[in-house]
Image 1 (cartoon, helix red, strand yellow):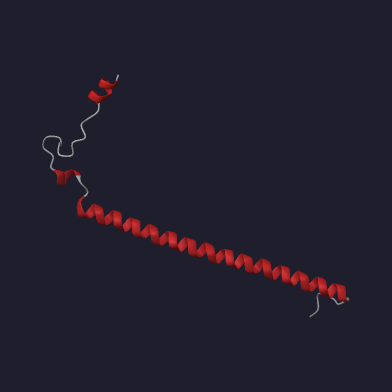
Image 2 (cartoon, one colour; image 1 turned 90 degrees about the vertical axis):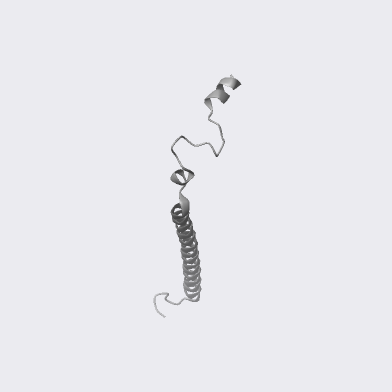
Length: 88
């Protein structure tokens, strides 16, 4: 069974190409490298921007919750003192 698998598997010799092909014809070359590099840099910048926006949203949400809790405490204190919480 193993010999059948090995016979069906092509050789992994990097110097062996199909007849009529050059190594330059099957490799991406400099243009392919630059395109891939550009995509990686763009993706890294997008990830950094996304994380920054998420952090900003989390801080705003925390601030809003804290402010809401503080306003609720102040309204509760005014009710306990007998003041009208609608008037300041």
